[in-house]
Length: 442
Image (cartoon, rainbow, N blue to C red; front, side):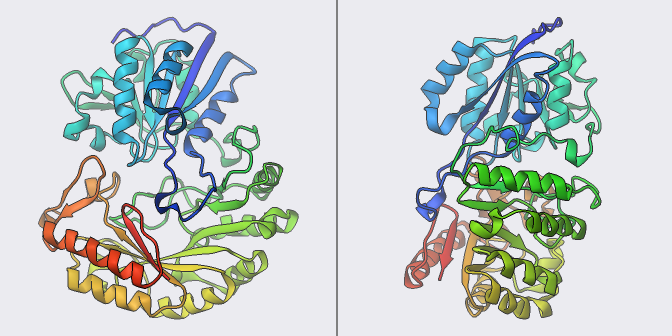
């Protein structure tokens, strides 16, 4: 690649993502903007006082392929950052191919939950060295600032920046070691910079990562548990949500109750603000560690939606997937949560390696006996999860475009298809809804 080695002070930085429409139409007209890409965009934008930067965002879903590529060509960026997840991986990789073909000197960076070398090594995405310069496999805020400041964006220059994976000609990757970090409160906020759209669903973080490490999930333990956003930072975020008239606040944390310090700060911020009590509040919560303080908080704000992960009732399956859960606490916890939340859903997964179709149906029957609703997910083979952490004996097969499990040692292709049909019928009987890879039951 011929990346310019002399970086001019004036730079054009483009960020591209694809925000999907709410699957199944459950949320009606609510807008769910891409959040992670705006986090990184805010970090880039924070450099504008010291550098002459033109930072712009391009929403692929709104513009479409033709307009996105035309807009990028007209803008002629020095750096393009693509944020990808399962639904956008193929389209945005194809967009990167076109960007590189049109301008080989443009530095193309990939980040986001699906930006992993294990994904780019899959057959549909092969040849990463021809369409990207580096992959950010973790938090991108510090890394993007270092890339923007870098005087040399050749592979050798990028190799001096921690937190990157750089493709080698002909295959393979150069990993550059740990990424730099800053205290949580120094992470730039797209809400406090007024980068997020007015009237859209707002996203709130109080910490990052997850103390659990389940094989079917890709949260990962990114930071130590002590690294949390302060009460003051969270307060500023919630006040910014109110300014933007956010109709709902989606807590992005792996669980409301999985980080004690973060929950304390959230509770304190809630006492200093008004918006959480006036809007819809959506969160995930871990059933084994629910305490009276969590129930009191949820009752105080009038939680609109709580997702409670069960996944399977088979202890052996949960152990095989490194899922820690106290089954004896599950049912009483769900019944307590149902008293303080307007809508509670027990979440389960079908197609899990290690669990048979019959075992899943037992899990479904148990979930349907709980108060509230149930949401069944088609098992996905996600990066940082089953894509790299499966067991050989599970013999998994999946669609590399959708990442949906197609078969494994316990589920044949026919089993998967038949279960999808069964869940579609059952969901209708329960006045539920369905999307491409989920089914809900009232």
